[in-house]
Image (cartoon, rainbow, N blue to C red):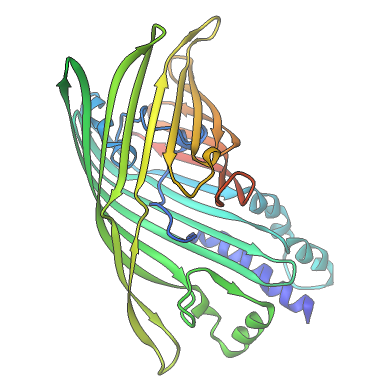
Length: 380
């Protein structure tokens, strides 16, 4: 019996990996990240001057140079556990004795799968940005006793941002505001209504037998609107050009939707409201000219989250452009973990890869989530 159950768990893992589903830990921020941001340790508040400013810091729209149109940037992030298990999954052709060792080795696999449209499409000009974005975040864990833990969500966002420069006491300040409409699909267990799904070994057997297993992976929709406000200002630090900034995101963003709970004739419909966390971030970036290296962009962000450990709120990174800005070398520290990335900009083809580790707990080392990331865009 134990072997048969493990076989079914392995099948669930294969299905989840191929489907590229969703992720939700108690109320997470909008599922949006640029791969540049991830490769630089998550520090982006003062260095984002394109359509991504709508999602990160709308003040950056004041620094957009000319009219641009950006076509889909498609990204996929896979947890290192899933990546390491991919060879084993490819060897799994049938549930026979030859595959017993492979199936057993999948127990204990855990991690996240994320999919991004960053953006789906976006239009920008100096002081203005309009874009549509998508992102999913899915987490799966197969425990040693045969149980399964899963959570996930997917966000669709339409954003409209405006920015302008003002002068206060002879200091130029870029101020930006973004209005975002958010639609979220959240995975939940229809029988219990829980968004943190836990299925024990006996639950899996019972639900497989009574045909209710699909109900454990239901989803409901919710939507709402919110506002982001940010600013940027240039200064000089030790003769180095620098930029300081801050942003407050998700002001008044409450998602409301209907969730069906139960089975058969015992289904009830209830209204679910979720207030997205208000995120406050301050940032600083400098561009020193280093001997033999030249200009290097350094950035640091600090996110105010009173419940988090200080190091969990600190993000810092660097970027060095090479070969006439065709190659971008990135690295940094995010929430106490080292990250790295590289991008290739061939004008008509954009390819970026990164390795990063994010912390899903309250302090570094609680619940590390290491991932490999790839993003591809074409033409624009």
